[in-house]
Amino acid sequence: DWSADRLLPDFLRAADSGAVLSVRHPDATRPWQHVLDPLRGYLALAERLHQQGQRFAGAWNFGPHLDDSLPVRQLLDAAAALLPGTAWQCADGTFPREAHTLKLDSSKARAELGWAPRWRLRSALEQTVRWHQSWRGGQDMHAFSLAQIDLHDGAATEAE
Image 1 (cartoon, helix red, strand yellow):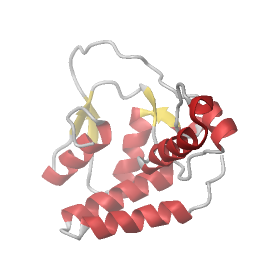
Image 2 (image 1 turned 180 degrees about the vertical axis):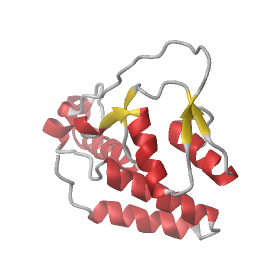
Image 3 (image 1 turned 45 degrees about the horizontal axis):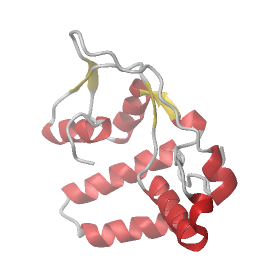
């Protein structure tokens, strides 16, 4: 997701340009996960909907482990540790109110689909940074992305 106001993409753009990212709400807690984890959940749900229809119709969450919901500052500190020379700072000013804590309850997906995220936050960050560095380095991103999907598919679910 390359959209503006997405924390990790904004951090990586700032890192690429040598800038320091200014962050509005560093103490806000958000659920963090690698995109491949919820995508694997969506595919599992699509398969069940195809096979069993209405039984699986409804609302579903595919979120990270509960303790991978961290304050923004902790995520950015972990990302900065993976990319030496990068930095972030608290932004000055008055900003619109935002929910202080966001979490997802994925217990339904775990119980009914047998789904769980495979990568904990540390692995998710490492893989995101590797992808970004490969993209910045001009690698074949189709091949790199397929290899990363294979790595994810072969990964055992990391312990909670």
